[in-house]
Structures are given as structure tokens and as C-alpha cells.
Length: 109
Image (cartoon, rainbow, N blue to C red; front, side, top):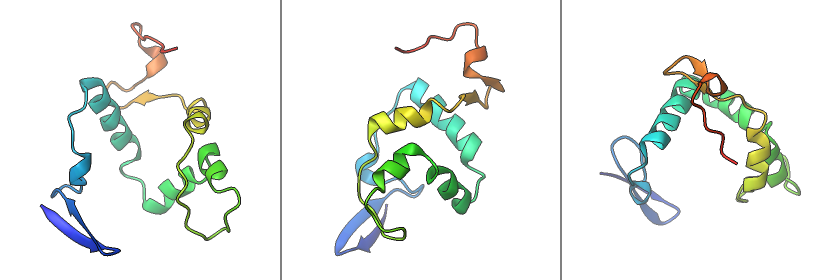
């Protein structure tokens, strides 16, 4: 276990960088989704990821009223995240297919 002192708080992390309070088991489906995200975005530089995220509706709405370089602490709204997700065609890097190309795809309502 690794720990850091940040803002007078001690924070503990596992060797792979996970905060100890965030550790929990996830479903096989969630693990598959996480793996696809890592495969799709893991090789991108931090500046590129920042550029992508800062052009999303959810990010822009959370920044309203803040100065351009000011750090924000507002939580992104789930409805805004859903709007962002509507623009994405999910891709499964493991099967090399878009989700909507799977014959047995179940669409959540």
C-alpha cells in the first residue's frame, strides 16, 4: 500500500494506483466495458484526453460561471453525461465490432 500526504490528509493507494476506498468487485459486464475504455483511450496522452473531455456538454455545463483557468469542483450532471453518450457509437475493441453490430444486442431503456 502506498500513501501520500495531500492537503493535510493521508491518502492510501494500491500499487496499481487505485484509492483503497474505491476498491470493490465489479460485474463481468462492467469489467468488459472498463477494458474497452482502456483499450480505446489508454494510449492517448493526458493533453489529448483533457481536450476530448473539455469539449463535452457535461464538462462545459459544469464550468459555467467559472473563470477559464480556475479549478472547479462541481459534479457533472448525469443528464449531461447521457447527452454526451448519445454522440458516441460504442466500440468493442476485444471483438473488433461496434456494439450495435452484435446480433444479440439488448438496448437498455
